[in-house]
Length: 159
Ligand code: PNS
Image (tube, rainbow, N blue to C red; front, side, top):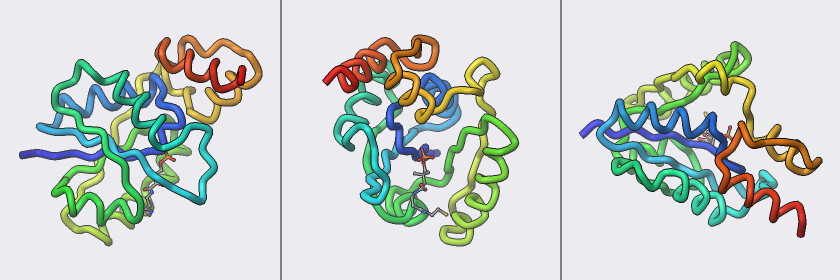
């Protein structure tokens, strides 16, 4: 069983994440989307909301599981018996950040191979932080997130 893990904050999930998830799911028998519960990072959406939003966007993919985790990713991947760690790269800046992470994760779990997928060019400018900021300021995020996520952001900022 080739099991891959794709970790992130997903605050909120974007079309960029969903593109990587769909492509990674076609390369593995099972893809675990792991939502980080990071108490030190202030998220707009709760852990439960982030999981729920992801689940709503991925209903059609049979080989995906959505889980949450706290602590070291390398340990969590070992617990799940995942051999592949998927990361998306939008730019050289992402690579600069992710390359040492990949080495660190490998040093913590030698059975975990990081695989980088290049983001699709049309989505290379999309990030959760940009989506949050544009939504907060009333801008158009319709090309960056699914309709269901745009609606959740609208609700959040109209409260
Ligand atoms: O979507 P994000 O916020 O960029 O995702 C970051 C994430 C969750 C991949 C990263 O923070 C992470 O791996 N956290 C788990 C803690 C850990 O293992 N840290 C050491 C990495 S070498």
